Each structure stands twice: as C-alpha cells, then as structure tokens.
Image 1 (cartoon, rainbow, N blue to C red):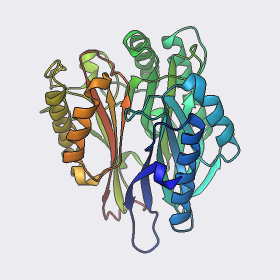
Image 2: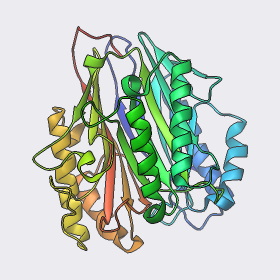
Image 3: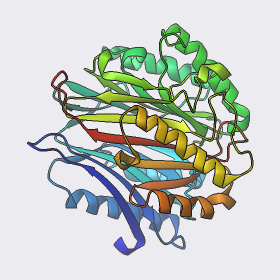
Amino acid sequence: MQEKTRIEIFRFNTEGGGVAELHAMIHVTDPTMTYQEQVGALMNAYDNLIQSEKEGTVAVFKRFFLSDAANQADYLMALLMETSDCALSIVEQPPLDGTKIALWVYLMTGVQTRALGNGLYEASHGAYRHLWGASAFNRASNSEYQTRLLLNDYVMQLSSQGCRLADHCIRTWFFVQNVDVNYAGAVKARNEVFVTQNLTDKTHFIASTGIAGRHADPKVSVLMDTYAIDGVKSEQIHHLYAPTHLNRTSEYGVSFERGTYVDYGDRRHVFISGTASINNRGEIMHPGDIRKQTLRMWENVETLLAEADCTPDHMAHLIVYLRDTADYTVVRRMFEERFPSIPTVFLLAPVCRPGWLIEMECMAVKRMENEAYPKL
C-alpha cells in the first residue's frame, strides 16, 4: 500500500542522546479507494514510518482529519482502540485533495508515555511532563454550555495533576460545528471561564485555533484538544504579539494569544495560533481575494515567528484551512512554491469570520542553548 500514500516529514535531532522530534503528515494518494482501503493504506504507512525510525520513537499526539465523520469515525475508533498508543484527535475537516482521511502525527524519542486516569495522555522526560488532551466533547444544549463544561472539566483535569490552566496550558484547539452560528457561544464561554482562571488581557491568554470542525454526533457542537506542560517555569513561556501587523484579540471580544513560545535548555518550541489575513486594527485584509489574503496571512505568521527569533525554515508542520474548495488549487500551488519542504495538510474548514477565506497554524522548533533551563 506504500504507493497509495505520501509521507511528509520534519525531523529535529539532538546530539548526545537528547529527545528527538518528528512531525509527519501522511496523505492518501488514491482517492478512488474505499474508506476502509484508505484507512488501511494510511495505517500501513504509519507502521512503516515507526519501523523506519530509531528504536524508542513513539507517538505523543495524532490528529485524523476525516471527510465524513458520521460514517467514518466509528470504524476508525474501533481500529485504533485496539492499538491506541497516544492522544487521539479525530475531527471532520475534509482533506482538500479529494481523499477521505489524512493524519498529522507528532513523535518523540526517549520519552515515557502513559494514559492518565483523568483522560489526559502524558509524555514525560527529565523535568517535564507533556500533557495532551484530544477530542474532548459533551452533549450540553448549545455551544456556549458545551464549551463552558469542556473548560471547567479541563481545569479539573489539570488540577488533578498539580497544574493550573493559566500556568501550564500552552495550546488549545476548538473545533466548532457550523462555526458561523456556534462560534459566538464558544467565545462567550471561554471568555467567562478564563476570567475565573486569572486569564485576562492584563495577564495573558492561551495560543489557540477556533475553526470549523465536527464530531460524528450532530449533537456535539464543540470539540477540544489541549496541550499543557508540567515542570515548566513561568519565565520559560513567552507570548507573541506582532503589534505592527496584529492587534490583541481582546480588542474584538476574543481571548487567545497570537502565539506562544517555550524555551528549554536545548530548543525553543513556537506555537502559532490560527492566523488569517488581518491587520493591527482587527480588520479583514483583502476581502474576496484569496491570493492577497494568503500573502497577508504569511506576512502575519512570519512576523510572529520573527518575534520568537525564528524563520519559516524552523516550521515543523503547517495546517491550512480553507472556506471554499474552489480556492484549493490556487492556494496549494502558492504553498508548494513558498514552503515546498514543510509537512502540510489542506483542509475544508471555514474560519470564524466569513470574510476570512483562509487561515493557517504552525509549530516551529529551533535549536537553542540555555543553561538556565533543563533540556527537553
């Protein structure tokens, strides 16, 4: 089945036996296969990837992107539960290459992994415990109540591990069914919960993506993925603002950071939130023009990366969201010319404002030497 898939890989290796990292995007290349055949090809490619890497390489997080969760998620979950090895995120965000499934997987070497009893997944090494949460959901009556319950439950999950939302959570993702209708409720709940956790425009927020996506059950309006670090000190965490290009999200009633970076003794991790074509007054730039919106989005992302002393060469993966399938060919060609070697997936997922035609997020990794902090 290898000829039916394509794997794009970013590797970050260290000297002297430190933790190595790998980001991979696994794509199916034959859209004529059945869903079961596509899943089989993708899982075979993943198994081959693991076997080809050095001993001790394990997955810490996987996100599967499906084209039709209602008809696909149960089959995938049944298959994965037999061999579950990490936090599993499953979301309906159709791959725009016409296939039914794609996978982003984040792997590390030399870490100890385990599922925690509270629903989180832990990858530990040295001074740090990396706590991943995936596909959290509930069936409260609307998106506001669902988001409130998700966040309150997450606060309790972190508390059970001796962690706090404001001090330890680095990144969140909110996948909102019918985002044009339900995003406002999710925003309201997040704003209100954050205030109770001392997350305000006077303190800081959390890097995040809020984007269209859905669960197999139509009663689920909001899915949430999370990432927190136990053992990290406040001085290791920095937030990105790029004020020449972007404004604070609180100025238009939302509560997330544009980006966050975490310094370790041997590297810097940069998490860029979902970023679109916006200026520093919160206005949509270039309405209706996908090419110009893409260029402005890149400019915003690169400005955020520069604030973390990084360039696009440090990007480990890209996730690109489009509102309109008709824009895929143009955008894909633009990305292939600008970022030809970075693992990338293109998804059908409308952004939280209808005027934004495109959004992207990324993670970057840069080699550092800082004796003040333990190595990853």
